[in-house]
Amino acid sequence: MNATQVFEPNEAVAARAAEIRTTLERDGVFVVRGLLTESEIARAREQVSARLQRGGRRLALGRTQPGAAILPELGWVLAHPRIVAVFRTLLGPHELRFTGHCDIHRNIVSGWHKDSGETYGGYFTGDYFAADDCRVYKAAIYLQDAGERDALRVRLGSHRSADLLAGREVKVLTKRGDVVFFDVRLNHCGQIPDRIERGIQLVAKVATRGSRAKQEPTWVSGLREAYLRARGREDRLSVFFTYGAANRYTEEFAAANMRRQLRQAGAPEAALAPGLVRALQEQGVPLCEAAREHAGVEGRSQE
Image 1 (cartoon, rainbow, N blue to C red):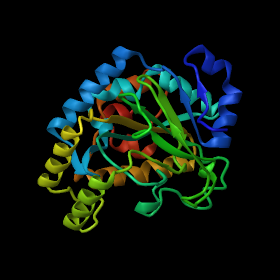
Image 2 (image 1 turned 135 degrees about the vertical axis):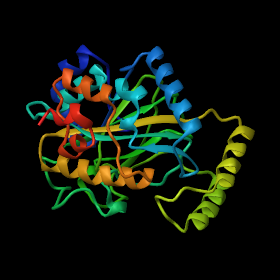
Image 3 (image 1 turned 180 degrees about the horizontal axis):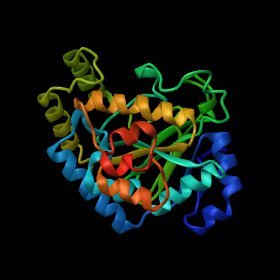
Image 4 (image 1 turned 135 degrees about the horizontal axis):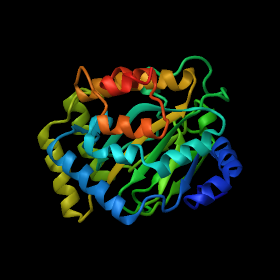
């Protein structure tokens, strides 16, 4: 296989449920083509851009908002019925949970990593790479077309190995409206810095003393933004959020990731947006325990 498996949206997803589950178990990733409309992507892009223009954290040479499930304007994306339907298709007989996780990004760079938290001490306990019931899945929405230079890269099948070099590398060339679904244990990386950006990245690392939570200096951000403008690059915006099966692995992920989000955001609390909580309730999607603790009255009423 030379590329990530692609499925068509809506009815075709439900009709190919067994194939989708097999693909995720084998590769750890797949794409649903055109799951969101052009107008929905334009709306999300405007909202993410506006939020990161006036807020967020200066990390990874860009801007990011950890714990973005608190943002009232983005609840419609995180609880989008077509996206929830895909998660339900993935999990089959297993009950679905929303973990409370969401990050939004603008122009960040990265290296190879997993989203199972190894760089933060690990989100799971036990031999989770061998566990068949570790079913914690992330949706990645890129709010622009992704080309050869800035496409998500993944290593197929690497969700079953602790080795960051495991798996065959492929690029996920998405179009506006596509949604990528992947196992949080999968080896992946986003936009890789070029030679100039690696130099800026080194300076930023020295300035923050290698901290993953400390913001980079404003002058570093200004330098990177000036470089992007000079190269004529469009802002690269994205939204990531996570659902899982109703079991201990999903609860462990939710609790550990909530702590990571609060630490990176520099906030003691992060109440989930009420509109998001209501939208999930209307679709019969409970929150994980850690998410309920940060959901306010509406979320706690699910207990």
